[in-house]
Length: 337
Ligand SMILES: Cc1cc2nc3c(=O)[nH]c(=O)nc-3n(C[C@H](O)[C@H](O)[C@H](O)COP(=O)(O)OP(=O)(O)OC[C@H]3O[C@@H](n4cnc5c(N)ncnc54)[C@H](O)[C@@H]3O)c2cc1C
Image (cartoon, rainbow, N blue to C red; front, side, top):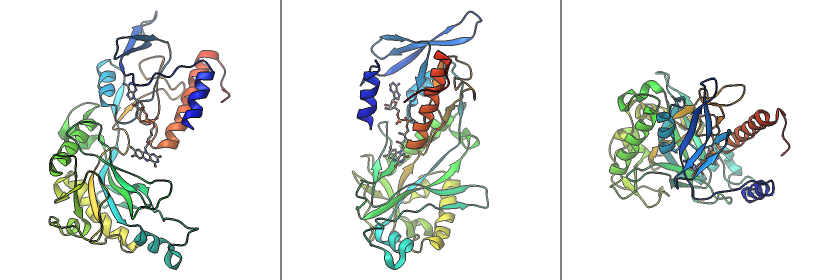
């Protein structure tokens, strides 16, 4: 798909610049004194002039979020979620979901979606469930550890994994920093803490679920071997996230066990930390023309702008933004793809 998209863009006269970073925005005041984008400056120093700039940065472009904030582009803190990855034998999930039909080739590897609403108003939910998949390293900065997950097309690895995450809001970011980028400060704090707890070699800190629920450190692996590479350092995850998140996840696991028998399996493995569930910031835009609230011609798009979470919603947002740009340039609402 991506190759075809690229060929299409080039056939229509577009150009793809690989390995080049946008370091700055060119912003000028127009005749009415309003802020208007006039292009971008690349790390090479080259300037690309345009009155329409789409910013589709992804949720980890921290350097660019900082640049936008410093340039006065309207950015605000946004809620997101933090937690751990949990791994079970895929056969346990298949058995709980498919019963006697578990293992039937037509059914493949089972998935699940779980949510628990705690008494304190915090929700814990499963996110990015990966049947027959692996837990993967997803940090974008040195000295930090972040988990994520993925399945190959075959979905035939030994473990099922999912993120178990707790929702957090801008009010929770105050201990870590001020202003719209405080959520990034919170992420960095816990990602650096996970790096230290993992032993400082990019191993992830991990714990057996039974020990996590009992509040004691894990000394040895049980029957579930975690898939994270380069490895997992056994520890006590009760200090790996804020207390309220640890408490919420501890309360949720036994309730999930009532929906998926065996979910609280003592040997199931937790690894962490999962901090990149969606963007910690929103680059606010007008509802009608999808341009930045205070910088004309700038179109924040996709997950990094805070308007999508996941591949499909980011792609749909991209189409909406493309239509908004076409409308601004040509006055035509519909574009043909
Ligand atoms: C391991 C893993 C597994 C995932 N699995 C799933 C899944 O199964 N299903 C699902 O829906 N989602 C999944 N996701 C999430 C999904 O990848 C994102 O939601 C999606 O890619 C967001 O799309 P986007 O276009 O907004 O941003 P991205 O795909 O992140 O693209 C942003 C691009 O902007 C570039 N960029 C950033 N700053 C600059 C700059 N200053 N100059 C130039 N370029 C810049 C980045 O390099 C990147 O190429 C997964 C993510 C990970 C990491």
